[in-house]
Image (cartoon, rainbow, N blue to C red):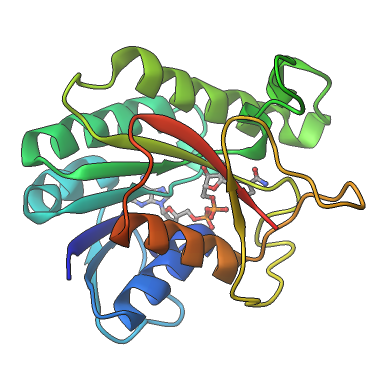
Amino acid sequence: MVTIVVVGGTGYTGGNIAREAAGRGHTVVSVSRSEPAEPVAGVRYELGQVDEVAPRVVPDADVVVAALSPRGDMAGRLVAAYQQLAELSAEAGARYVQVGGFSSLRPAPGAPRVVEGEIPEEYRAEALEGEDTRAMLVEKAPHDLDWLFVSPAGAYGAFAPGERRGEYRVGGEVALFAEDGSTSISGADFALAVVDEIERPSHHRAHIGIAY
Ligand SMILES: NC(=O)c1ccc[n+]([C@@H]2O[C@H](COP(=O)([O-])OP(=O)(O)OC[C@H]3O[C@@H](n4cnc5c(N)ncnc54)[C@H](OP(=O)(O)O)[C@@H]3O)[C@@H](O)[C@H]2O)c1
């Protein structure tokens, strides 16, 4: 069993990961500014701004999962927040798993990343900032940090929670599509994939994608 700090552990992504990890018996510490709407049994909730709470809780972590979102007052602040988490994780010797966006994937081998093409206005700022967080890891992560950047499928998010099927596929930086061309993953199955990777690490300093 390991100690997992889930930054954003009351959100859509972090909440599912915290639930999956606690359900498997791991020690889970969630970081958020507000109380969870529905606390998960076994999860310790640490409240406050990420830059104030992380220095207290990351030193005890085996794994840090970063699942903030660049929305509201966090717009424009994610790269700095994640850089601090990456540095704290390296100091703690913890593995660092950063959740990003679908738009950082490539639609086909050798093609430009999705974010380099036309993105609907309502998603553009989030997509660009998510890509900046990927670039931060690749270019500035401490050399000894065991990091992982995880992109979900395109039709992933609180707007499409889906159901737990107990299955998923793991790809690299080229997006996975179903036979009908769709790209989706439920919140529960994305969390399943992330916690499986935490329990059986098979990707290091790498970008992976998770989809059906
Ligand atoms: N299809 C896609 O590509 C896709 C779709 C959805 C999400 N994503 C990615 O997944 C990641 C997570 O998104 P999400 O939708 O799951 O997020 P979310 O539901 O908005 O959750 C964000 C979490 O971060 C916490 N938080 C925000 N600011 C904080 C701060 N300053 N200090 C401490 N905690 C803070 C929130 O709690 P408080 O507000 O109480 O602090 C909450 O727990 C993002 O990188 C997002 O881009 C990708």
